[in-house]
Length: 314
Image 1 (cartoon, one colour):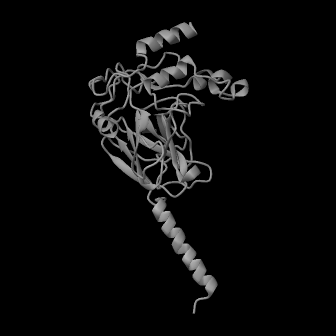
Image 2: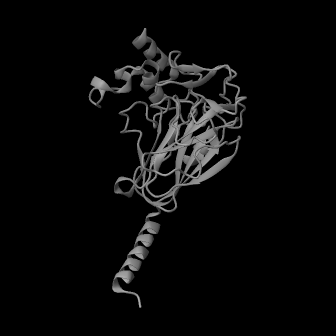
Image 3: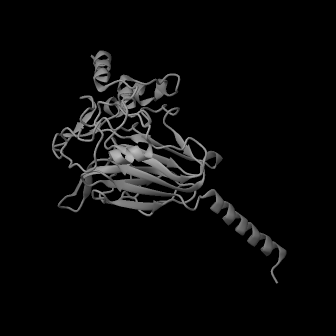
């Protein structure tokens, strides 16, 4: 006959399992999709104390997807690597987003900036999921994060950076490579480009009261209003979802169709080209995805941004 203590432990286990199931922490996952016209190698890095997901890095051809299960309380980041290849010694490297592992999997390696980052903390404060798309370390790919199946509650909405910034990037932030047809492959943050405390929000500038948006971070913010543009951009760039059978879809080069279905009221700059994932990666004008797909935004056009940059840094 079972002892009272054993029965109590069994009952506690059942109640815990039931509570976990109700809260949905066993059913979180990430579905990563490559909607670009070229191959992308997603990278995954868990946060401190979080286990690795099913994979830490893999290859996605155009149109391919892969789903990764996420354990309770997982935190970490996902990003896309581009223009990857293996040299004659068998070492695997990428022109953008490389994680330094020398292999297609990242094995705990971090994304080398500049890279567009999708960042997550699941089952955090108040049992909420926290997520964002960050350009604090620069930009290399357009990314859309869209939650599906979450319970009501929180600021649970799609976020990301949906436009091609590489060609439009200011000259002193632009990263070029002969591997890309037009040379532009990524856009640095001002911190990465210049290393000063003012842009890195460090030293005397290490607080929200002293580190303010720069003309460079405003370039990112005007183009991608829901994404982090600098270190203290929390108010408009952090999103939360309550419990549920939540799948977070992470789409590289989101198509105009996915933008409309996920967020019909999405604001995007009217004169920045959306990337249409069916196009080949030519690096030339990719404005074939109509700028009329989304309504003109309240944001400054790129021409005005460049005037601001020219005046601030001349």
